[in-house]
Each structure stands twice: as C-alpha cells, then as structure tokens.
Length: 225
Image 1: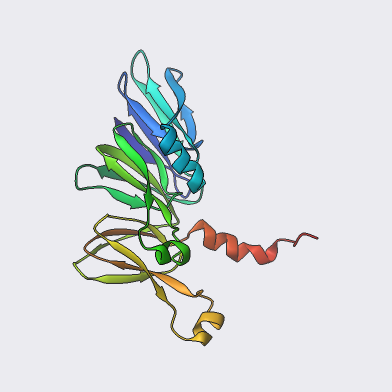
Image 2: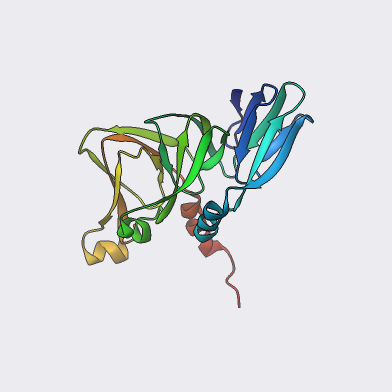
C-alpha cells in the first residue's frame, strides 16, 4: 500500500492498493474510490462487538478490498486538522482517544483499551475507554487542529489540558492532576482536572479538540425551551 496525504485544513489520505490489498475503517470516512474497490461490513466477534457497544463505538468495521487489479481509495478527516500516518509493529503499539482512528491496513488490530486508573478515565477528559492499535502495518489517525509530539524521558512529565491528548505509547502512564486552589478551579476557566502524562515514551497532543470548540460555540446557540 502506498499513500499520499492531500489537502489543507480538511485533509484526505489517498491510498493506492495492490490487487487484493485491504483497508479497514470504523466510520464513514471514505471520500472517493476506484470502482474496483469493494466494501464489506463485518463485526469483530461477539465479545469485541459487546465491548464496542459498551464503549459507545460502532460495532462494525468496513473493509475495502482492491479486486481485479490496482485500486485507489481516499479517507477524509471529519474535523479541521491533520491526518498523521503511524507505523505499527511489535513494541510500537499506540493508545488513542476513541475518535482519533481513521483507517489502517487490515494487518493492524484495533482493540478497546480500558484505562486501569479510574480517576484518569472519569476526570481526565480522555475517557476510561480508549483504543489501542497493535499488529503490524500502517495506520492513519485524525488530529483536531495541529499536532505536537513530545518524546518523554523516563520519569519526565507533562500536564495537558483536558481533551488535548490524541495518543501515546503504552510505556507512557496517564493520570489526573487537580487544578490547585478553589479560586483557580471555579474561576480559572480550566476546569477541575488536567491530564498528567509520565514517560518514557512518545505522546501526541492536538491543539484544537472538537470538545473545546463545541464548548466555545455553545453560548452562541439559542437554548431550547
């Protein structure tokens, strides 16, 4: 599979497939394709489907296959930002927020990841349930706004605002950090908690999470009666 990322604030990734090559996605992100690329919708097994239903995700996956020769398919982002390619392999697994996954080769496994620290899940903004990419191959993730990467040393920490964590390597520990002081909590506009990431490992931070945009626009929408 060869690919090219095109576009500006609404990017697409155009994938060129050899005969029989496949791509997988969990949402309607296909923008255009050649006629010989065929789609098949599948579930991931009863246990995995139940876990996805519990997490609020789609229980089904769309698999696209190039039949009869070379094929082409383009996947587009759903929000202004970036599409980032990731190389997944042994020792190169990635933990993602639920909305970050866009598409991947079928040799990449997409699984539910349960954050073992309940406080991080309920208060950290990224959620108790995340996603994990494993296996081997190329995956594409959506980033809201721009992306900033940090490679944290062992024990090195970074405090990130709620919702801005796009992903991190499994070696990185995720926890919560309370905003100090009642005045800061109630008047500072930053909420009660931030996300605390501890190295070693790489982290991906997005600059404009869709949740932040929604909160900023909410006062301008008429309230329901």
